[in-house]
Image (tube, rainbow, N blue to C red; front, side, top):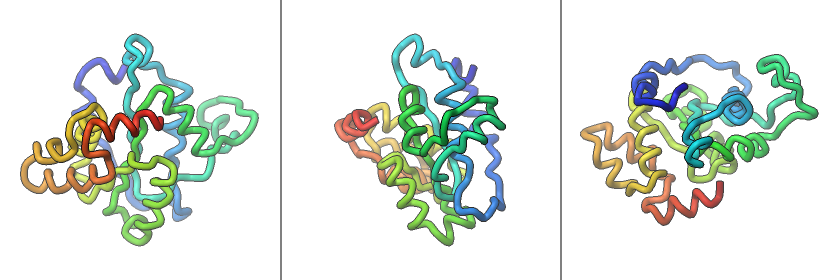
Length: 189
């Protein structure tokens, strides 16, 4: 159970951002999407019809697809075929608002940021957040949720002090500034 209280805020501060990936230009972002779509039940959706939130974090591009053999090896699930990232997004978006945080400090993003952003934006549109200080991940996640729930983007960014405000404003830059913009984006998913 990960939605019953505020413990998730403390857990976000303990996230370990790995260094030194595999050198293949993508990471396993599709695995948590698949897991969330196929192996979670959340009270907010089941009891109240409200979507939860799913954030992936990394500095590389999304993979092209989830291989059926990986679903079997990792989750024990039998798929008839590989699933594209677009298909996975459709599946997971039924219960979750899906965001991806691009860690700009990551070695891959430092070298290929335009390419990384292009791939993620083609998949997620405005729900791509650019994180320029990994130490502010929790604040960016909370702020994105606030904006998605209808708070004004600039007001949310300015609610933080000092450098945190700058980092949050940078990360939220792709999100709609107003509630009306956020509602248009919600209709998309």
